[in-house]
Amino acid sequence: MYSKELEAMLQKKGIIPGDEIRITTRKKTYEGILIPRPEFGDKNALVLKLKSGYNIGIRLRIGDKVEKKGSKRETFTLPKAELKKTLGLPKVTVIATGGTIGSSIDYTTGGVTSLVSQEELLYQIPELNGIAQFEMLNLEKRMSEDFIYKDWQELARHVARALSGSHGVVITHGTDTLHYTSAALSFMLHGLTGPVVVTGSQRSPDRGSSDAFMNFICASNFAAKAEVAEGGVCMHANSSDSSCSFIRGTKVRKMHTTRRDAFRPVNTRPIARVGADGSIEYTGEYKKSWEQRIKLKVMPGYEPKVALVKFYPNCDPDIIEYYISKRYRGIIIEGTGMGHVPVKPREENYSWVRYIKRAVDAGVVVGMTSQCLNGRVNSNVYTNLRLVSRAGAIYCEDMLPEVALIKLGWLLGNYRRTEAATLLDKNIVGEITQRSEIDWFP
Image 1: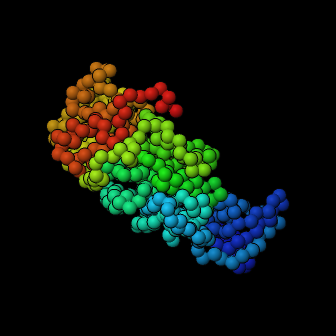
Image 2: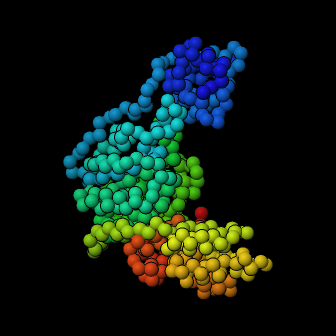
């Protein structure tokens, strides 16, 4: 609700949220759609959704005019264009899960909401005609922060079924936990016959600066044409609309909250650069689909009782005791530098060594990663690192903390505890590189 004065003015003019209005001030004229005041917004400023997709607040002054241009729009629907099916083109299955790429502004609430169907997005991209024959699978839509491991398991099974008749698969997904899902699918799917491409957007399709369309075009081109038999993420390579990067699913991370090129490779190069024109330039090593010798196998087991614990100065290591008491089966620690946690602090109760040993003795698999992200942990460089390793912590090479978490949950869901511990620091699907190159650090 706006202020009583503004509400009275709007009521007198017959204006309600969703109506197109014009506001004329002494300096400028603004046109857009009136949306409800955000919960913590200024009660005395009208909020407009401009044609550019951005919202602005305008505080009215004496002499400013407010006019109604159009009637209330009950819902926002992207107009549909025909998506042709051309025989002879490769088949691509699109699995829609929700997220910003499948959303738009809701003019009755002012917030972002899911589209009626993902086809609305496809129909807005005429460039898709000529790329592939698309088949749509709409799953229950949810924002990515609401995903749990059962969603990964469901996705893995759908991908396996889709690949039996498609050259590749595109999964539309919210960006916040997109890299967790890409890692989970990488471990759960073995013997892929084609590319599995996870994509999303930082900005909803109704915004002028949306990255949804280009991300989808590049992901579709890669799924239709690439000879890659791996899963990964395809998103903007830079802030312009020139190309996207396809990055291995276990080597990618969201590195910015809002930038369109938020997803970056860590401790590796992108597998490929995908041009807006559909061109593919391979820039890293990858598994080739025609070299696959094993049958596609789904290993969806997952142990949800694994935790990611971040060390920070003055952090009480008793947090480890909590997870032991809750019968967690695995813990990944984000240490500092090469994998440090306190060993000989001035106060004994801040030492992590005995808690790590207690966890390992209780049957918990404990892995060590670094908050630095770039580079790798190494238990042999410092004496304190050796003591932590001797307590039972497994140093996870150059794995990202989130990937180590997903890997440990997957290992414990598919193998016995001793096997899981043995495999944690071994490369399975490209999550560990044997040698770090100097140009990998941005």
